[in-house]
Length: 141
Image (cartoon, rainbow, N blue to C red; front, side, top):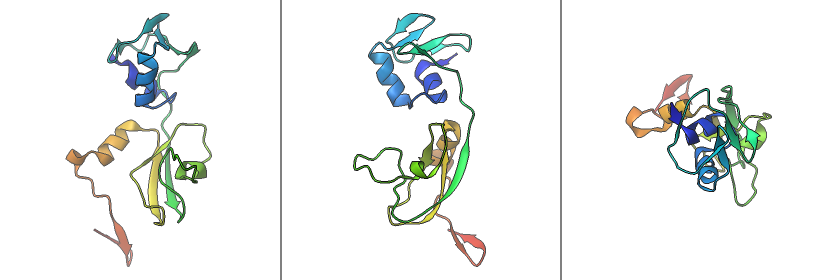
């Protein structure tokens, strides 16, 4: 059993926060019953619909390594409609960057739809080094 909003996010339909909005607003049905309570647990055999659209349980995971050019932002959404790293990847999956690089910074960035990997790489408890530089074919911190 897993939380409904997590199952929806893992399906690639939308983010977990957006899934929570759908649930609270009564747009989610589990086995043809409207669910409005966050944290509702569902099983792999449950049928989940959002706005009467059936979702699949889990999307295939994809991973992209991108050498981010200058003048591109590293975010999924931008209120100023600037070009983002998402625009540089041709995919039908809902991907997002792991971490951030400044607008004028170039460098390697990972884009994925794998929430577990994102958590491993970004959660402070895992102490992953983020700023590695390459000098004379050696990585230095």
